[in-house]
Length: 535
Ligand code: NAP
Image (tube, rainbow, N blue to C red; front, side, top):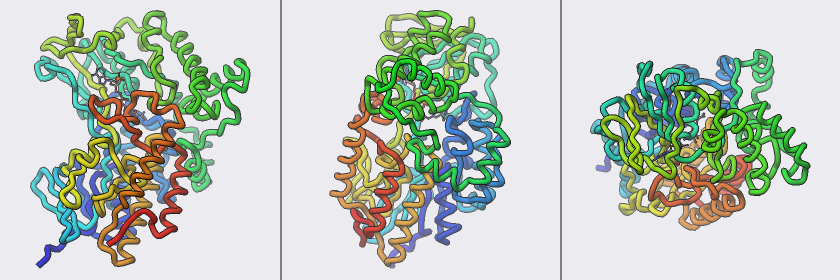
């Protein structure tokens, strides 16, 4: 007798993706769903990343679910940009409101996932010894969820505590009077550094590559704006979905080099004052495609850094010159540059003089310089896009391992499925319109696509669905073409897999407007899921 599946769908993850997938699959479609989540509770990235200063830099009213009008009406964000505790409270509210926890098993990691081609189901194994048979898997495992492995010899020998931004302790550590060192000046480091400087006795920032960071300009929510938004949420969401970043920034009219320097200065000043991504999104149309155009906004930003940092040598160390602005994920800052004017903060350039080892008493650089530290903080980033999916032991049809199929870089069709791995849907997987697009909306769009596909399989009495190898190869070409028409490949960023030594350097996501991506997906759906095969 063939074994019967334990459920219709396993949903992996209880962040923005998993929770919405659980809601759609179970509450709306009435399927039997089991959720698996490694953390003890819901929240995904917002469960783990609770470091001082952790905050979303997409406006709260846009960085939220749009699928339920009453939810939108009932929830009011207290600030223009929400801090981590408020986003986590929101996801807890969503989980309770839609009764999503009931079918989750928390504190459970997926360690194996094997496709049984005879039975046409997945066999999902966990670190708790569960084995779950399921027809479909929806992986809501996140794109920046698995930390980069620390590359520092001797980390275990350090006498003091080592805190990572992605796994900050729930009880806030006491840093008063302590010598704290932090490695990493990406979006996480740039948010944490000003807060750590306020708390520590002395903070030493070990910076390898400076990043462009622009002001966040957070403030309490404006009640009038909240009321206006709530009166027209469908319109607000439609405008967001039609914008490049998934936030309705005003579209720029001009190219940067067709206007005079005064025009550019006034425009960049406006963007700088507005805060958030405005300077990149609202200034000129060609900032992400024309390097000379980009140079103008990059230089404007360097000038602002020089104005804000008192010591000219420190200011120069903070001025990026190795990538066009915006081609690495642009961090948003609050008091970041002024932090370097404090007496208790030191910036150390570890580009020419790399961190060689962590010692029992601190850090040693390549030239032998030692820094004595009581506490070490790592803000060194993530094994983005592929990190979670390649750590689950996924084995597809004919014993193919996902890690082998993705050895030269991830391949997928629409970022949704990979040839050879039937009935496995990857929410905002590599190749989807994400990262350059507001995550909650990208996730909703993708879960909607996955549930539509699943419904199609069920309605037509099919047993499996997977993309054709040819459609997948064409999608890879399209991703490459789109990316290479922009400046994105110029940066050694996690968008390109370039932040992890040895990881293949390929474009990881769809570089283009989400509206175009959605139109492509809609066309695929209308043409009976062109490029997919069913059995
Ligand atoms: P990240 O942008 O990848 O930054 C990692 C930092 O660690 C970089 O400065 C990197 O330097 C440094 N680093 C890594 N390995 C190193 C080494 N061996 N020696 C010295 N320095 C090293 O990671 P992140 O800051 O965690 O941000 C990741 C993404 O999460 C962001 O881009 C964003 O999408 C998201 N995020 C969003 C928010 C928000 O909404 N506000 C906040 C935090 C994070 P190099 O550049 O030289 O490699």
